[in-house]
Length: 78
Image (tube, rainbow, N blue to C red; front, side, top):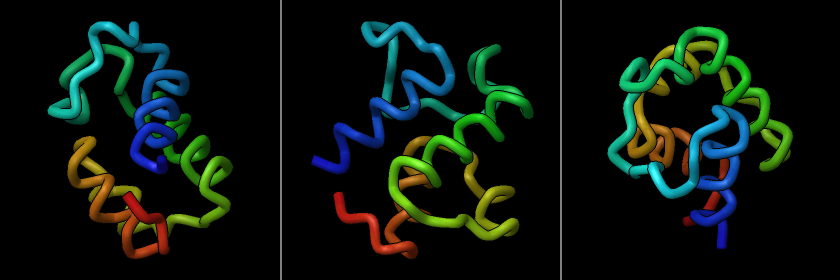
């Protein structure tokens, strides 16, 4: 269930067309995931999963897949 929630946060916070979303998405692959989109995404993830992401992890959050590994550190189960 958390994987669906994770995808939904990506789609909504970055304003991506759900039909065009790919789990291979990476930072700066699309115009919506720029530095401002990145902070919007991080904020939405923190809010939806009730976590606080450390600065180093925010910087390292470079793709959908890397993000899953980072969220595991905060107790999010996929």
